[in-house]
Length: 418
Ligand code: FHN
Image (cartoon, rainbow, N blue to C red; front, top):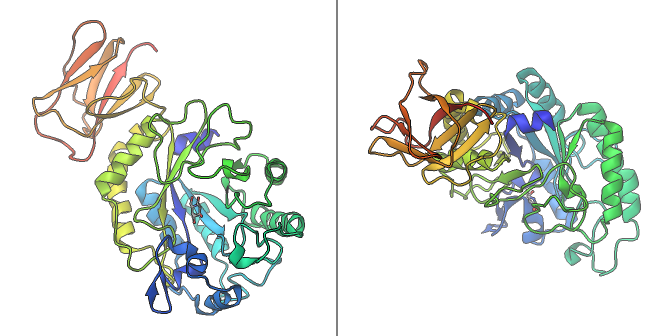
């Protein structure tokens, strides 16, 4: 887990056939998340399959995507090799329902992205859905729309042993080494706890140092955070669209989140989170010991939407100056602080100040260590700030009265001892 704990910030990419309808079906805007349109609009398998003929993302440029991630300060990419709709973004020998065989595009998206990631030093990871609305052996009673019986699919074992494992082998062998296998769709009735354990072992047999999220185990509905006492945790917990108030003590975790209200592209979803919000979420997550997996939903042309690109670029500007306060840090040893957040490294505290003290004094309560030096991380000269102690466990730092960074100014305290 060492590299994973170091990187702290990654890009989630939800991309597939759902980018074609982009949230609209037969002239109607379909509510809910875009990648669920097949289910939400009650589209039959045969009708949905036709979208493949329209999937021709001629503007797709893997190198550009990798650069957008890199410039944002993101160190890993998790892309949907296969989402719930069953469509595959690589050249799979196990199906024709993939980008090479079913679309006019006929370019192996994952192969191109693997090359680009390697070039730019980004860890490539795959999201892979256990639930599959397309494969006849996997249509589960969880979705009566796709299978009118309430019984389990009698061939689900075959789907797992032959199809799911076969495809995962292709992904690890031909596109790896991978950083993470990020499972999802594990709540279908036929997916058992034993299958989860078996899959965890199987994936490790393909690549011993691969990281596997907790969704390989079955039945954790909702946020999928976990606690240290959970019997089966995979390598880390995956709170979705939320940041656990106190982190998840004792386990590794990663918050995945959308920038607007959908994972897969929806042309009319303009409810974008602000850069300020996203950057503060990144600091908040790091201060609680987690990673931030921030989603983009590219268009059917192959472009990451402009508002996402803008926000990522702005985040990158901040990260270029302040990345040290995020990468490789651990949770705040001070607990909650009134002015923002705190992250730590041996010998250093990073004070992420959201609410700048206009009287020029920043109070840090709960700190008994001697402070050797204090400075603004953005100050290249590292000009020392004055620090005085008030009582046994409070220090007061004298800071400039003008707010240096309205979103998050990082003040570094070099401290003695543990
Ligand atoms: O159903 C999916 C959803 O489409 C999306 O992929 C998210 C990302 O974490 N996971 C599932 C819901 O938990």
